[in-house]
Length: 348
Length: 280
Image (cartoon, rainbow over all chains, first blue to last red; front, side, top):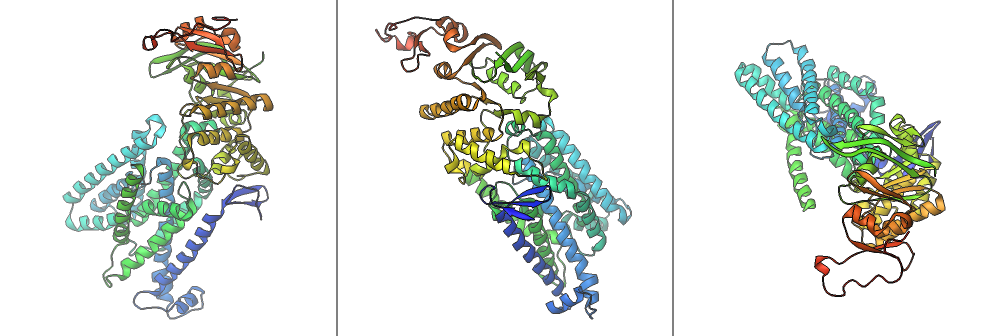
C-alpha cells in the first residue's frame, strides 16, 4: 500500500493492487481518534457497575487469562457493550445514508417514519400476545413496510428531497398515533412492555441481538463500500449528477434503501433508540469539516454515543436502570434545537 | 459540415404542453454554436434534451450518429460535458473538490483516482483560470468565479463537446465577456465543439460560428451570424424593430433596437451610419 501526494489538497491516495481509494486526511485522523475513544468507553463500561472491576482485571479477563471477574465482564457486560457499539454504528450508518439522500440534516430513520413503523409493529406484536421471538421480525417488517409507504408517497419527481422528508414526517405522526391507540386498548402490563420497547433499551440483550446487527452489516459491506463512494456526489443536484454520468434517482433509491434496511434491522433488535441516527452524522460532519456526513466517522461516533448512553443509563440512578433511549433523547433533544436555531440563523 | 449533435423529429413537452414538435437540427462539429430566441421559445428545452437531462416523447438526439439514449450515460459523460443553468453548490465544497467531480465518469468505487484524473483537473483549473482558488470553498466565491469553477468541472470531464445553458446569466458584463472568451478559446485552441444558449443577441453574433434562432419551438434560421442575422429575422423571431449595423470592433452584426415608446425623444436613434440594414 502506498500513498501518493499528487491528488487534491488534503487528500491521499491509497493503492492496493488495482484498487485506488482517495482518502481525505482529516477524516482518517478523526476516525482514529474516535476509535481510541470508543475502545476506552467500552473498557470503561466493562469496569463500572456492581461490582467494580479494575481496568487491569478487565483487560486480563478479555485476554482469556481466566479471572474471578470472567462472569461479570465477559458474560454480563461485554455482550451489552458490543451490542451498544454495533447498534450505535448501525444507527450512524443509517442516519448518514438517509440524511445525505434527503439533503437535510434533520432527516433520519426516526424522523421519516421507519422507527415509528417498527414501533407500531412491535407494539401490535407485544400487546397481541405474539411469542417474544416474533417481536423483532415484526418490527423489522414494520420498519420496511413504513419505508415502502414513505418511498411511494415521496416517489413523484424522483424521490425529491423535500417531498420525501415531508412524506416521512407525516407517516411518522400517523404511525405514532396508531401506536398510542393500540397501547391504550391493550392490557396495561403489555402496554408497559411496549412502552419500554418504544423508548429503546439494551437491558437484557446481548450476543443474539449483536449477531443480527453484525450479520446485516457484514452482508451489506460491499454495498456500504459503494455507498461511501456514492455519497461523494449525493450533494450535487440532479442535473449536475446526470451531466457527469450518474443516475441520481437510482442512486437515491439504493442509498436510502440501504439506510432503511440498516435502520429497520437495528431498531428491531434494540428498540426505538432515538436521536443517535440524527446526531451522529451531523457531529461527524462538523468534526471532519466536510460538505456531507462521512460514513465511517458517523458509524464510530454513533457507536461511541450509544456505548456512553447505555453506560450512563446503567450508572446514573443505579440500581435503577434507565433505558439507553432516554439518555440519547436527553442529549439529542437539545442538540436538535441547537441545529434548528443554527439553520435558521444561517438562512436569514 | 459534419454534425456532432443532431436531433431527428424531436418532440419534447412538460405535462401536456408540447414545447418542441418535430424538430430536426444539425449542430456542426468544431464550431461554437449559439442558440437564441425569445423567452419560452424552447431553446433551453432543446439544450437540455440534447444533454439527455430531458427525455423526448418522440424522436431522438444523435451523438455522432448514434441515438444518445442507446449509449450508457457514463460513456455520454466522457464525450459530452453539460453545464446546467443554475447548478446547486454543495455547502462547503472546495474548488478542487468540485472540479474533481468532473472525473466521475472515469472512476469506480474501487478505482477512485488516477494520475490522469489529477492531470485533467489541473489542466481544467488552469484553462478556466481558477487554479489559484483550488482550496477555497465554492460558496465564498463571486458569481463570475463560481461560473468559471463550474466550467472547469465540465472541462475536467475531458469531452469533445460542451453544452452550456445560459452560462452568462447573473454575471456582470465583464464576467460575461470573460466566460465567452474562455468558450471561444476552447473552440479555437482546443478544437472543442461548444453549444450555448445565450440571451444577448449581440454577444451571440460576436462569438458564434453558427447561430440557431428559435421561435415557438421551431428553428427559424440557422447559419453563420453574418449570413442570417438581419433586421427581418429579429422582427420575425423577437417581434422587435431594429437596425443591424456592423460592430465597430469585430464587424459582426450588431442589433440596435429601433425607436420605441420609451425612447421617443427626437433624434434618440441616429440614422444608421454606413452600410446596410440587414446585410448579407
